[in-house]
Image 1 (tube, rainbow, N blue to C red):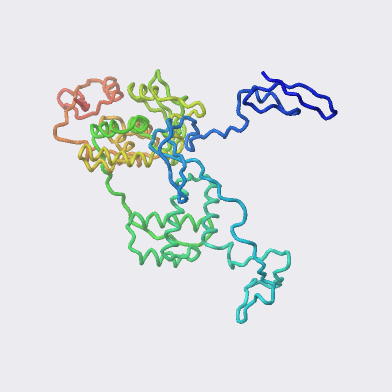
Image 2 (image 1 turned 90 degrees about the vertical axis):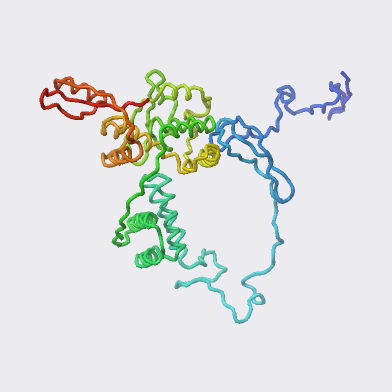
Length: 441
């Protein structure tokens, strides 16, 4: 270690130790930073924008117009194929253009034959005053401002963001087609002249009805006779083939949808505390669309798949809480699975299909309709009755096989009904009641 003689301010000399290759520490500086082992200029840690995890891996580069590149990353926890980038290089600070000496007040800068519209209100001041003057007439009553105000009112009334976004989309579509939202006759003219499908017109009327109700506009809604189309449903084997072809996280997510009948947004809000590994149940504590909370039983295999997932330290949710996190990855993998299996009908499968399949299968298996209603969280029985028609349409064949049994007393009949048996007929000679139950091989 070398010693260097250094002269202090008062003229006396002192020796200081210096390590070769390092800059000596000046008096007054914090010497502890030299031995702390941490670099003083560490950059902030990069996190996933979806789940907030720091478990990232590099996934290509994004090339900019100025021939520079930005690193792209993929989250290991989400594992849905989506990528995000770091912030690009900062733009040069300072004004882009030089400050101009041109002034609106200058007499030499006002061309002949031209006028400046200052305002259309009485008592207008000149532009040199400190009073703020709006140069756009009707800015507060513009279409965009009214739709933004409508969005804020919907949020204050507790509507879901997906519902608000859907209504905003249909209101903007009416405006794009030439309708004036403040005049109901203009909206009716657009609905009458444009060739909208029946389902689209029904959604447009519902969105504008909500808009007129928010702003107290008198309008009698148009009656649209709309009946939803019959939904195509895959078989039980096709569902399992489709789920097995997805990636791990997305496959487990769809398996939960298939066994619980939950909506996509409800499954995204499932927490680890909602899963009972001993009783094999999953609680849906964040229902959507006014549904009821419920607890559904799942298979042992589904519980084992959930336990195989990595738990996040910064979140108690099992999956990504954003309902749109798995959308793009699901559509890409759906196309791949349809091409591999040679079934283009797989392109009709979406997240809500598994809910319809669960309700239809439960109805076919002899589960009472009230119990199906409780499993799906429906508030009204009319929403569950459609699965009776779908059961006969998609899951009824001539080769269906059944178990059969009979009961002689009311107590025996009650026990059979509680176990899922369905009454078929009563023998008039013996008085025995016969029951049947579907058999699946």
